[in-house]
Length: 434
Image (cartoon, rainbow, N blue to C red; front, side, top):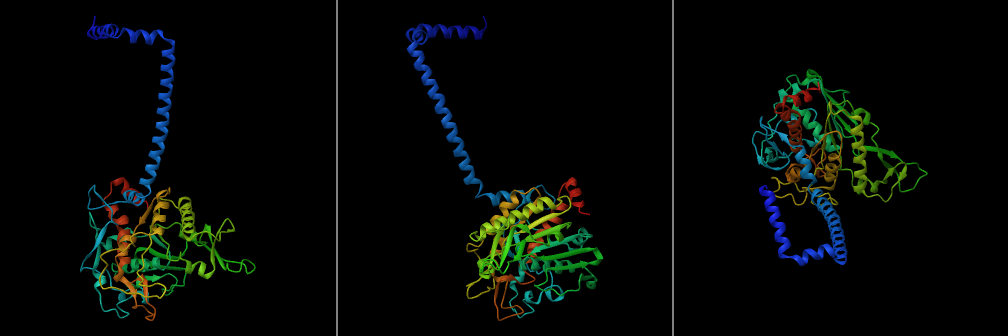
């Protein structure tokens, strides 16, 4: 007999000898068998109930964990590789540091900066705001090599879509790229227009590189229509939240698309002027601005997923830019000489959160430029009284050069920095833009 068989036989004999009454009762008593069966069934029911409760607790716990960490999770999907290594960095997690090599250009030498944004030319004497660079916590944003960037962007089309903040970033990018062009006359607005806030389209051509950098004014991204005079008296116009702006066909076939929105989604620029929301040709007079903004973003995301070829076009969405009004109602603006040491609660925004959430679920990859926290420190960098209309203070827009230049450096981090330091098959994917 094997060792296993001998051991099993010994255990069986021991059980029989030491507890004969228990053994006999479990076999021979019907009442005991019935009670044992009931206990077994009750035990199984308790296990089933426990499993269901555990499932819902897990779901609830996941819900509570995932939503607050959505921004972090999204960032982890959009980290940038630097310095030829396998390490990745969240470029939006960092601080402002003094760097005397800034600014990146002279606004007075760039014909595409609006006079209202050239603060030094408008009399600002303190120029410390120009000497700050964004330093991510665990890496360095690669210094822009303008000549190499221009070569990479040769034969490309960059399109900005949004409000005046988008136009400021557009102007910043043009001025930055012009520092790498010898013949400044080879850079011109395609329709001969002066840079102005009222024109819906502006396009600048870098003829030596066959590169165009375009701006489309679309402050809400969705369609704005005037209401019939026979409609509800207080409703002068509507935003069709389920229809993208009627100029959206002009945005396709771009190599780089950079969107922003948010500054106009306030009661004063909506309900205060009689503008309300509409979905499926039905007025939604009670819809909140936050719900409407989210609905508009979902319309935008559906358009991106349907119309944009990710093998050709890189898509960016820049989040909300904090303003620093001392009193917005009275239009009081106190521009400081140095960045703030604290963000004073402006590091987050419901508009930015909505962008992060919508982009997270899209089919076409979207690089979210989450500049809300970094810009919250820069109370020193606003236009203030140094605009083309010094009677009106401005703590919303930014001086140029200034903060928008850093936003563009982040764009280059994706288009250029990650291109140089990614595996060969991903480099080929990027070169499909050609």
